[in-house]
Image (cartoon, rainbow, N blue to C red; front, top):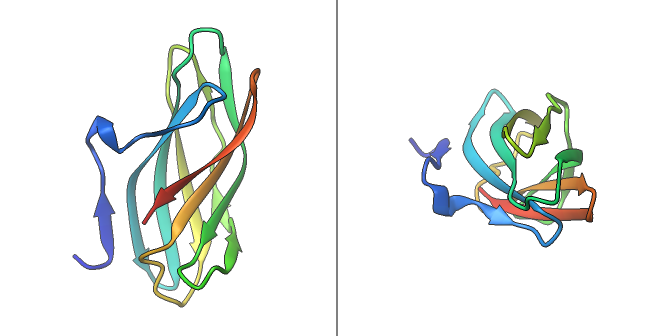
Length: 115
């Protein structure tokens, strides 16, 4: 249980000023890889879509780890996108963040989702 987190509640979302919200739905650390599921949804009626342009794992040591595997769907005003992300690390990630950089018609912003 110390290697798994899960957030199903709506108040776990972190919203940006450029028209999207992101939620770390689940994360687990197994076999030197952090696997995470992130939901991205449009929360502004003037935004048609939200596309992630970068996903990184920020370790508690401040080290940034690039995505090693994953999906990059587009969130639409009518439908959330669910990202499956994988980050290679042999170091305990708990206390770090999954950083998601998302582009919308209102601009680009990064949200930090705590692990």
